[in-house]
Length: 342
Length: 120
Image 1 (cartoon, rainbow over the protein chains, first blue to last red):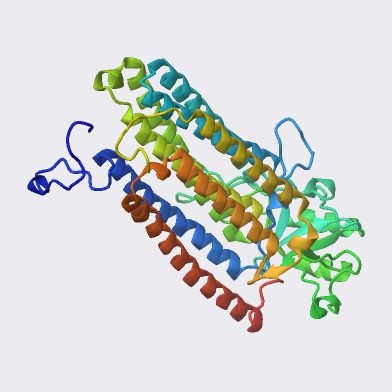
Image 2: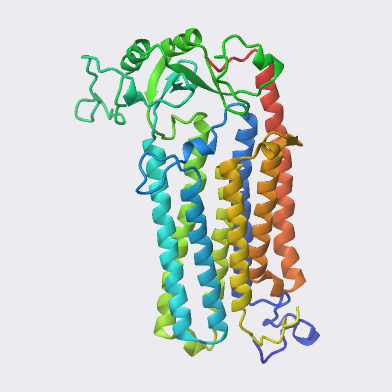
C-alpha cells in the first residue's frame, strides 16, 4: 500500500487497477459495505418490531416483568441486571478486539494472539448467557391462561402481586395424555402438555376467592379508565396492566381455552403473541452473528499464532474481522435498548 | 484526518480505555433508569413516546457513535467512505421507521375505535 500512489490522481492509471479512491483497501471496503447491508437487515427487523409494538401499544408486555432472572439467585426479582452484565461482557470483548487491532499495527504477534483469544472467550460467554436467557424465557415463571378470545390472563392476589399457577391450581383425577407419534393415526404428535389443565386452573381459581385476573391491557388512568366499573378499585396503577374485579375475573376465567407456561412461537405467558416471536427471531439472529463472529475470530487467531500475518508484514485481516465484531456489538446496543429498556 | 495517508500507527490504548469507561458509564446510567423508571420522565410524553424512552434512544445513539468512530476507527477514514456508509444507513433507517411507525399508529387507532373486540 505504502509504495504506490493510491490516491486516484494519477490519471494515467485510473483504470489500470490498484486505485483506492476511498483510502481503504478492497477487503476493508467490502467489509464496510457488507456491514451496511447487514445493518439494514437489522434495521428492518427492529423497525418491524417497532411496527408491531406501536400497533399493540396498549397490550405489549413490560420487559421489567419478563426478564427478572439472575444466575444462582432463585426467586429473587432482578430485572435487567443479567442483561446488563451481558452488555458489559460484549462491550469488553469489543475492547479486547480493538486492542488486538492496535497491537497488530505495532506488529506485536504475541499481544495480538492474547487479545484475540480474550475476544473469543468473551464472545463464547455472551452466547452462553444468551442461551441461559432463552431457557428462562421458554420455561416461564408464573404461568397464565389464554382465553377463547386469544388474549392472555395472569393471576394476582389481593395486593396485586403475581401468583404462580402451582400456588393455587388443584389436581383433578382427569388425565389427558400427550399425543405421541406412536399413537397418532398419521404423522401426528404434539408438544408437551402444560402441568395443569384448564379445568384444574378454573377449579383452583374458584377455591381461592382472593385471586383476581390481570389482563393484557394497560391501564392509562384516563377519565374513561377511572370510571370503568370492571376494574378492581385501588389496585390499578398508571402504565400497569389492568386488574379486574372478582366478578369480572370469574367471567374471564370461565372463558379460558388453554393453559400457557413459558413461551414458544405460538403462545407465551407474557402477553402479545408477537412479543415472543420477535424476541426469538431478533435475539436469535444476533446470537447467530455472535456465534459466526467467534468462529471467524478463531480462524484469524489460528493464523496469527501460525505467523501468517507476520509473513505478510500486515495484520489487516485482524482489522477486518474487528470491524465485523464491533458491528455485532453495535447491533446488541440497539437490541438491548429496544427489547429491555424502552 | 491527520494520518490518512501516513500510516504511522501510534498506539491508541489510552483512548480505547477512555471509550470503554464512557460506554460503561452510559450503560450503567441506562440500566439504573430502566430499573427505577423515575416518574418525572416515565409519565410525560413527547411525540407519542415518554421522555424516558427518548433518553434511552439518545444514549443509545451516543454509544453507537463512539463504537463506530473509536472502535471501528471511522474517525480515521476518508470522508467519502464515512458518508457512503453512515449516511446510507441513517437515511434508510429513518425513512423505514417513519413509514412503519406512522402506519402502526394508524392501525392502532383503527383497532381502538372500531367495533373489534379482543380482550375477552
